[in-house]
Length: 258
Image (cartoon, rainbow, N blue to C red; front, side, top):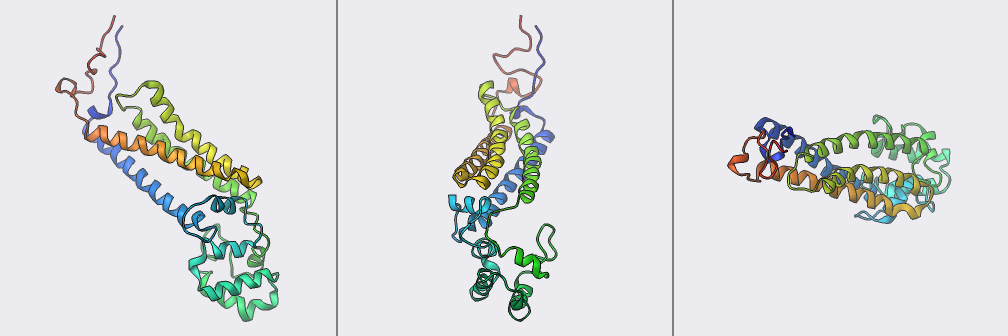
């Protein structure tokens, strides 16, 4: 029975290897920057550097001993205003965010440190309006259902396409058992779905916070293995001269069998 030869990574034409390499490098750098962004936002939710279970819980379930404004000012927004002015805003929120303090005390601080982003950035509340700031002076229950829905669908659609490309390239890797290769290709998608599902579970019950870390760690490891393996095989793995062309099957996999 004749079989159609299938190209593998070491024997791909140079232009294809360049195309695949550019994609993998861009995705790899993007994943690193995404990790840094997580450390600078979620990683500061408890006011301490480094990602912890408390950070995850505060990010999705909320810190229900504080107002939302206080949690933000002690967490991801900590570096955007001096300590004294942050304490003024926190004290105002704890006192119920009275409107009488807005013009003489609170508005000047907000104008100086907050509205540069919280008036021009899509998705962020306009802090030129007192009512928007007062809404964040209630108990921190984490992101709203509407916000979590928006982030979830963006996360699923966007990252799924990245993993599709990485998996498609890795599918041409040689030297792997087909079952193991298939499981590795499927792993990032499974961990991604688990990660997003864990956001919702943690919103409901903080004990699920560890699942968020497990899901994110899982798809990061799986995609990293595929990226480095693909780059290695395309540029560093040497094949015998008899296999230099992609339309010649590797030894032991003759192009025709009976």
